[in-house]
Length: 167
Image (tube, rainbow, N blue to C red; front, side, top):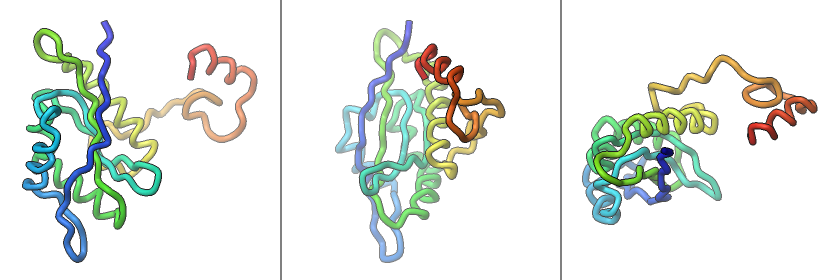
C-alpha cells in the first residue's frame, strides 16, 4: 500500500532581525510552534528554504520520525539554517512539511526515509549548495535525452521513452 504524504506550507519562520543579519533562535522556534500547533506532533519530512520574489530556494531537507516539534528546530538544524540564511540578504525563511498519514500505529519510517532521500536529490538540483551533508551526491549515471543525459535536444527514441515512463 502506498504512503501518501500531505503537503503543508509554506509556513513562514519567525526570525530575529539584527543590524547586520538575521537569525533563528530557539525562541523563534517556540513562536513558530504556537502558530502551527497542528503540525507539531506529526511525522514526515520537511524542507527549509527561502521565498524571494516569485520563487523558492531550498536550503535543508530533514525528516522527523518522532515528531516535527522535536526535530525541526533542534540546535544542529538551527546551525544549518543560519549557514543557509547567511547567503541570502533578502527573502523570507519558510518551511514546507510533508506529513505522513496517521492510521493505526506509527507512520512507516522506511517511507519517510525514502521520501527524504528523494527530496534531497530534488533539492540539490535546484540548489547545489544545499546544507544537507548526506545524500547530496548525484548518481553517476544517466539516460541520454531522458535523465541527467547532458545538453541538447532529445531525439525520437528518448522522447518516446519519456512518454512510456511518463517522465
